[in-house]
Length: 608
Image (cartoon, rainbow, N blue to C red; front, side):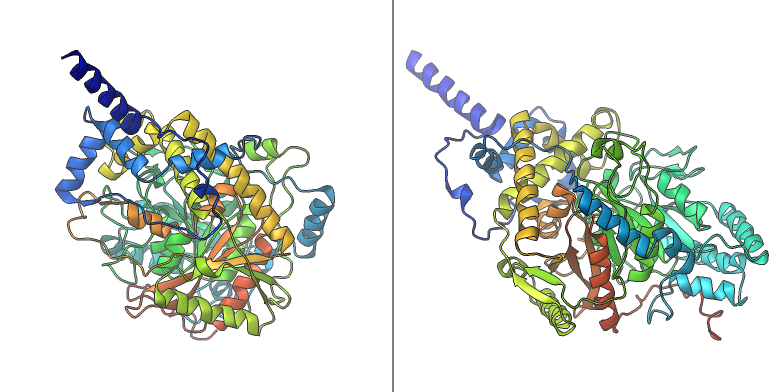
């Protein structure tokens, strides 16, 4: 009997060690140092409907929750992050990725900013021709400048269309018709006096539902909204440029899912196909732009939340360098999150960037962390100069690990860049598996901190509960190990750009066609971590180490759904991404409006 008890206790201790704690590492595991390409599929159940509710309860609320969560984490080999970090014991952990440039580099950026000041860019615009598919900021500006329409007349149509499309697309979480018209009439007066504030005066812009917009209900994708009494810095800057704030756009709860569907708001939907995801978490922002309601909408990106919806919705989206755009969070600062515009065209994205990045904010937490004179000035010099001489890094094993139709359009676009004088450089990015797991651990742990109070008191979506509980189950060792891997990735990528003299790295934005919404997901959404992990294949690096990345449309699949290309740059080098993106856009003349589209300026542009 005593032997049986001893054996039973041993078994229980073993189960506790494996299921409830970290998997032990021996220090002798060397396979984690293999530099060959590896991006293994994630192991996790795919859940919708009633099954999702049951599993969510088991993982997030039942007495077995930590056991089940630990099984999922261990089954996906997160111990590899600790194992990898153990081989670099002297590498200091990095919580917030900051690239402090030399005085010489800082001055170079200042000269580039002086060459084409971003403040002036908002005033003069950037394009002399219309897009072949979407109306641009400059289209609105020319209509007003030519006296073909006043802002209130155009906005009356935008308001009407927004109300008509809302039941189909579910893109707005807060929309105040009268407020829009008040703003429009103020713009009328400025134009009548010949004193528009910028090319954005009278142009509609929308903001993601995690940005404070005065007077609007802000939900952060959840059930309980609170009316904002202030504007975020980003919103203030757009108002100062004369832009008309349309409203707040639906996002996935807390930004947890990049799929884009909010169970709370039962949307939004993709204007290219109501049967496909729009991408998230800035999903409503993408839907607003793709449907023609506005040329610019603002998003945040902690794991592709700007680039993924831009790609899935046929748009341009840039997640800027971490710290480039000052903004405020109501909750804890998330170290992987950056801000940026989702736009109809590259020119529009540049104008949005000009508004958001033109002015430094010395009292912002990032400027204080950076120290000295703050981050280097934003610049856009070279925007119209083409790509001749630009060095483009390609990791072939990585980029070709994608659907055939994705790789086809990728190679086609790469040939265009080469024909315009870009130089393709073969590169290798080691340890992608471990680096991607580190990003997943960072974002899960930071999400769980954001939801620490709501998790125990609010009615969260079942998918959100699962994600937050997984983050809560991570140990301190694992999170610190992920921060050490972040430092490794930061230094490795800086060396890659320097050693190969790269201007950018080119990948697909996502490796597969736009996913379809599954059956039985209307009420509760979907928990599909294997799909999410695939969507993040080319995304995670920019968030983990804070470099800028941009998605631009390059084609459509056989179902007519958009395909995006990602441009990844070095810190503070957004200008190089814009330069390459403009070249790609100039050559991609086959852009198509989605079936659900509002022709905002059609009746006014006949004589332009």
